[in-house]
Length: 176
Image 1 (cartoon, one colour):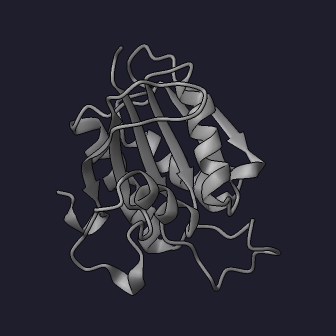
Image 2: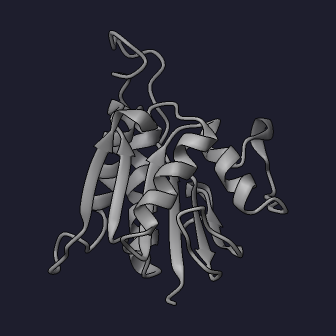
Image 3: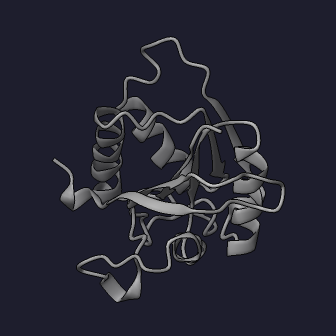
């Protein structure tokens, strides 16, 4: 069996002061628009191109994904990346996200999930409970625009994934 990889990406920094009519409509702020392309360049330079992307429908996740995608070479080469936006990922619980991961990794080998905290932290800790990161800001691992690459080498079944290993964990400030 080929190894399965999961790319967890939390949306970049949003603008709490924007005149958005709802939390769902909140856009990125200046820092978010600066950090998201850094993440895209880092993913591209390190060869982490997903086969499938599932993103929350929130404006800030859509904007993050677009900026990440624009900074990669994914669109410049022949690619078959399947991108879906799912309302269920908006502020989703750990169990909802894990269900999406399990369902999607049954049909692809490298999946990216673009979502929100606290669900993203819970998923990361659920698969990799021993993860520690310096500068654990406000007890959050998946700070804005943080990306985690998790590899699963065990048997995959409809019941879930096993043998998760954290390959990479990066925040924009740590990226070149």
